[in-house]
Length: 494
Image (tube, rainbow, N blue to C red; front, side):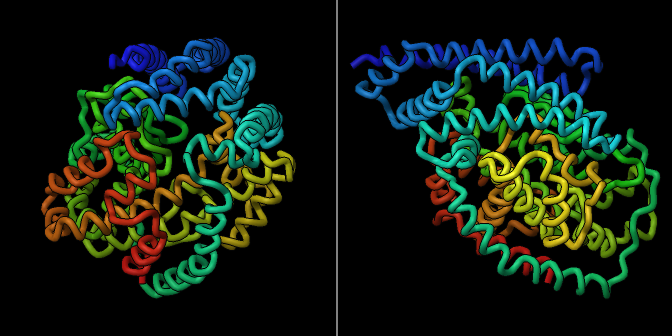
């Protein structure tokens, strides 16, 4: 039987992918290079593009083609592609084009305002824009929830992490609550007895950038298919053939930008190694946001903060910034494995990091489900920060509820991906160690060939061919098991 209907669909999704490519690069430019006065016009152009993509995807012919293609003689990969096409279509038809356009416009306006409002600690200005984003996001969540028979928040969570629910998250995060606060306290107490010398700057931006590029090269980043730039909030964007990663520099702090680059390089390596033979099709996309975060946290935390990798990094650091007491080997490792309760999520160590995520998850779920309003966020944030980390963010909006970019464009449901990703990363690294007995000595020698081949074979090359559960079970022998994350933290820090 000919695959006439399926082939017609692949051509349509290839076209959608090309529009997505343009949207991704225009979005990257908006965050990195665009002059402030370009914001409105760029926002309107991106909104127009999102409406065009929505119209193509929700055309009545697509439903007919999807139904007919099910009957055709497809191989396993094509069946998986058809499943992902159907998922994209079913998500898209739940929203009218007018809402897609409005979400894009209010998101661009909120993000653009946030760039100046955050440094100015201007909660009033920011919250006015955020209210519009929340209004539109609730409208979207309501439409999705009614169609899916889920809570509004779960209907949004499903976009980022198919198959995940707040009921499952409550179990996973509930388990964290039983042991993480005590572990955090034990580690902080243990490290309080150890004297650590902080690196003394300034660390020139140019030299930090060169160190970042050298580290990306060490980690196998393909510079013919991507680049490093600066933005207000680090991210990885673009497309597999042209991956754009960003960081931000602070001349008093060497570690933040460097590990931001390592984190984003993990995202980038995943993108650069997605199956090229299926590019342009939904099956070639990354599996989910939690799997994406598992790759960045695999690079940043599992690999990047290991003693072996830090010893490898140290000569690169001293070559750029000279020798100082902070750069003695044992001290350099201690600096980069330091656990401290801090305000900023992207700078948090891996022990305190889940607290930042659970806090945001609880607030955004209540916000989307209509249990709280935007005005309630600062007080709730302060209360949860005090509970988890013993820190107050009262009137400190800049380092509290305004620090992240995710809510500005309505990405409600994304935050849980970070801690799910940390759990997946620990489980994957454990499986890699079992499969590669020489792994620690390989890392110490700067030889990542076997490790990256293992990631390529088990995660990268599969794109969205398998469900998240199938992917992780194939790679590690079991579905998500948070025990590996706990064991990793205890082994490294206690």
